Length: 141
Image (cartoon, rainbow, N blue to C red; front, side, top):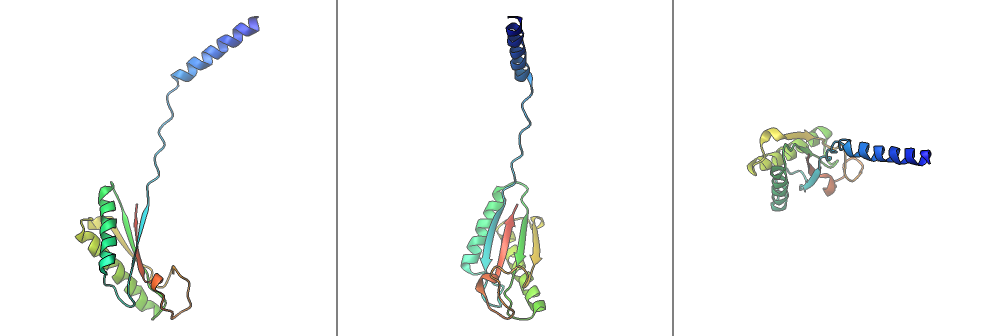
């Protein structure tokens, strides 16, 4: 009987102790990452009307968030010399950045990167024209 009473008292104490414990700290939500792809014609860094629509959508997402950072990464296919493609990938990325700024994204929130022939979306041998590789990726964090 004494064991039963002690067990009841211990259980009551534990319930009371649990009620007085502070709640656990809130878990920070992982930042949402959004990616947008803009494709280009062969040997071009000019935005098509569809590309401008995609950039506008990315700009709206960026402006709706708080403290967003954008990385704009240009890519090319493997046609042409590697050094030319690196410069072309930067021209593409800068064309997208310029359009983002026109859409109201602060220039200080945008980082521009050129990858040239590196990080192909579709693996090809050298000298191959592949439309899926001629792109700019906008990543919003």
